[in-house]
Length: 119
View 1 (cartoon, rainbow, N blue to C red):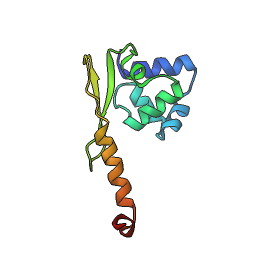
View 2: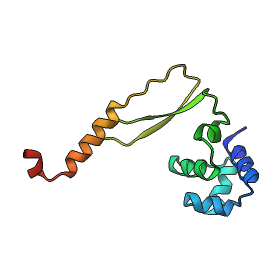
View 3: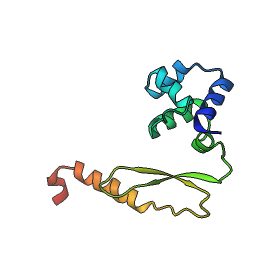
View 4: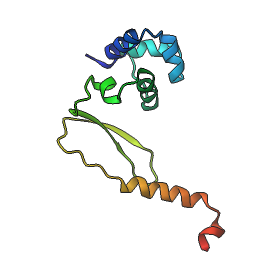
């Protein structure tokens, strides 16, 4: 089953209208309907909003599974945007927390006035 079919099944099981879901994701109803027809896909932030409305995990919504056979991994490189990648059937994905911490610390230090940094 593809993402659009899972979205349609979830929507019908909850008895939601496409308009309600579109509003929750900040898009027009036509955009949501295109997701259900597999013409386009939601962005990461829109998928997160959908999973919250449906009260299901991203894995379940995106892959139809929450048994650990698929995962979503987030890679963060200092000074760059967050990259989300889908990891399917990876036995032991590597999770690195340190780059995210370094990025957060760099952003905090940049937001401080230069006088405070000299102290």
